[in-house]
Image 1 (cartoon, chains in turn red, cyan):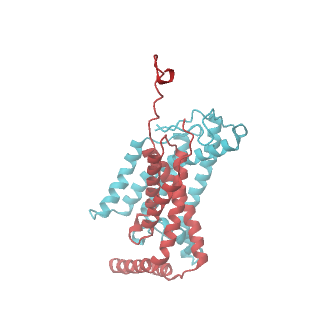
Image 2 (cartoon, helix red, strand yellow; image 1 turned 135 degrees about the vertical axis):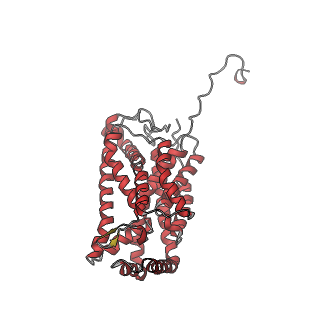
Image 3 (cartoon, chains in turn purple, yellow; image 1 turned 120 degrees about the horizontal axis):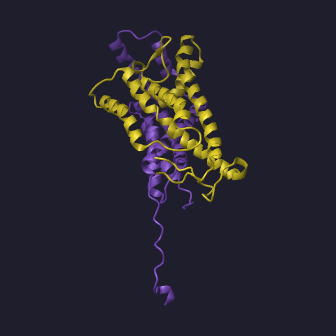
Length: 172
Length: 191
């Protein structure tokens, strides 16, 4: 039995950075939570590749949660410089929606304006980061366990054959 | 695919799965209530609505044309996400009858692939511009996919709780490690 603890951190850092970047890019982030789940699955895949023995759902949960936390941090950091682009995207979308629908549902315009007009604050940034990290960690657990079920299946190494009779180096 | 829990006493498994189940059920309920609470509070001009919408923003695009409406305002997540969460809740509700609390196991990969196909096809078709699915189709495909997800989530969380109880000392929690190792008691083999 292999009791060595798997190396969770490196897969979580790499996959979390990838998931965080993609979930922070405007328009690309339309994939919702799937970037985080996909990132955690990627981390589980990397963990499975780097770990000789079989992995369990608990391993997937740990690497997934770490991936989610890394992704939340990267996403939050990216959201600061990308904020103007995100706001422009929401504004353009609202305009196109108004053209298609003719008239926006009551209160929707106000809602969209509030989404784009709130200023940056450090407290808001850290509160958002904390909430995102908690939510992404939960989603990461899910993705990590799914990833382990898909990629963590390994055959346990066969036991060494019994010692053969006859002369060996040890007896010479 | 089963994660063997044969090395851990069933009572210990039950003690790990039950709290994981209860916390997940309560969390999912609160999550879904918050999704509906956001537009309701917005219709009441409450400032808390902004917080709720912002809370869901990192996990959903919240495009209004892809959201169901409640009290005249879009829900805090899109139709597909709502379907996933509703499916997750439905899967959780069925969990005690389907799986029970006495064992920890992962669903078969084939079942996961099968249930992922509708959402995957619908999403891929929309991505390449082949079609634009109505919101109910998005909701339905999300619902199907979401139904299998709690079986992964609960397995992972339950196993973490088992590890924790094993570290605290198997005798106090009833976990019988049987030489499986403190880092990974009982659920080592994924088949």
